[in-house]
Figure 1 (cartoon, rainbow, N blue to C red):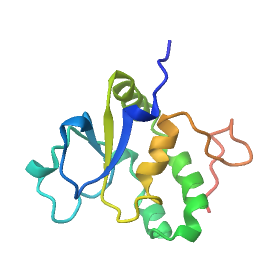
Figure 2 (tube, one colour):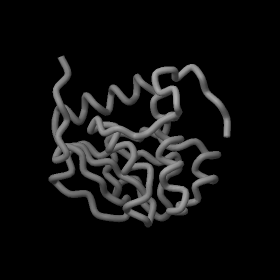
Figure 3 (cartoon, helix red, strand yellow):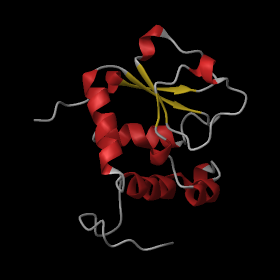
Figure 4 (cartoon, rainbow, N blue to C red):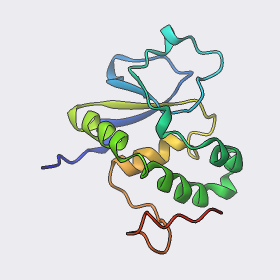
Length: 139
């Protein structure tokens, strides 16, 4: 039985904002530690760098809003290759407030936004054969 995750259970917060008592479990989801942020100040409970976009995808995207829809699709495919870790995050979010911490300046077009959509069960378009994750084609 899977408990539905509510939008209130998953917050997004920049790594440069102070941790708050309402953050719940704080999960850093970037592959690289945020520049200039001391680990003690970040109050990170879990660093899920394996769920961050691959270096190649991150560089390709370059936080270019024109590439946002394609980034979402490609990143969704990468995330679904880590079902165990994704399940861990789902369990945490089902248990209470979870804050996905990210470093990007753009609060609308970043990996945390995509990961939150996936955790909330929102559909992100995948390849034309969505039920066949074994058919990976490089672009």
